Image (spheres, rainbow over the protein chains, first blue to last red):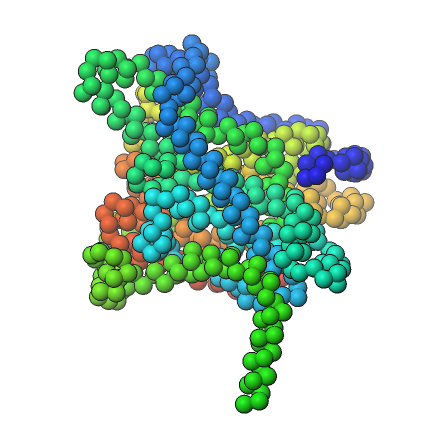
Length: 319
Length: 315
């Protein structure tokens, strides 16, 4: 596999041998059982809330008003999802913005991180120290929320544009350090040197040799970025105050007041409106949106987990 | 004259030699100048009596200096004591639990016999880390919703009185700590588990031959060998003792005013001061205080660690 996603045969074999070697140094069966119970309990507490929200989203709205949220619902219904897809142009629009932001942001972020990390990884780079300091200082000191707000909204004039949701998250020192370490460990100096002798420029070297060789590392950073963009609500909360771009996470924040607003309006709209408001699957719809907003993460979870563990392990390596 | 010229020439030739690498790092460097360094100059707002009249830069130049007035207002305001107490106390608890719990879990994961089960546990515990605070706040709401939530349903069916969770502040220190650990445990466990797995197996083999028990192995091999990771994470978290996770303290209590006594921390205070009351001077003073103290603390913690054990220091 190109990305090394599947475990190779060799890795599996090594694991087996290690397991066999460990046999003589194992914990007692009783301790093993206790540990398993504790860990299983912890694992379940991490998953059950999500399952609960999924169940609520499939519960009939009347059952919710009568009996509250239940793990075993009295009546199932797809009403919430139907409502989301029928009348939810806003929701679909939000989905679109989140996807656009995530894709654009990940590409821009990868380009910025990759080029910078590559320059830092080259030992012949005369200004390496300077550029390392440039990213180290912001890790220790920052201007704070207010100064950031004024720079972005008043100096850069990015308020209410899509760029305010993309640019501030595109780069950070941690990602650069992880990727630099990855370049340092996975691209042998000899490859770089021989390419140089063949007359390849640094630009060509980066795009034609380093990028293909460092795909797993780039995938890790790409997933870091994807997750950060998909889950970002803070920038939207700070810098978006008209209804032009509402990413999913921000929609979830706003929907609390928006649904109430819908019902308040309905009483003015007349009998049709009242009826509509009463039939609106309010509670289950909210939970349905939560489920829809997290679905891509759940599907990509195996990838996420594997590469995150890799990235964290690299990131933990001290220079 | 001659020397200056040749120095200039060598500088130019060095620049030329590194031309392409500079070109590659330039976009990133510009990003850092705009999004990280430019706001650093914004901290002068904290020393100004800022009134927004027209453009921001113009009003910044026009407004008069007021020295430390903003800071004085900040520290004399009644809420400030509560805000500081919350921020620091929560962070101390988070630092301790954030080290102890994940190490315990990592040790257990490392010891249980079925490795496939260990993988399943680890994957499940990692899930909350991938969800945003907004999503998590809905999860919690499903349990704590005053009239539909699971817990109140349960209380009702047992014949007990229901609790208005989002206005009873006495439960919130516990809820905040629980939710923060719930969300972070998977991530921290992975960090520690990675360094535990990286320990050379021969240490343990030698210890077994010497008749060491499992507990002794953990005490004398595992813990000392993962100490560098613990120290680095400790220094970093001490540096952040005046910063709080905004999402945790804003979305999890659903921004409920009744809970502010136990949920208002510096970050939420600054945000509310900026957006609701428009107290620009005071909120930027708070933000400057936060990053300055954080900076000093991280240097101090690092210095102390490097005095005790120079190998474990951050820099």
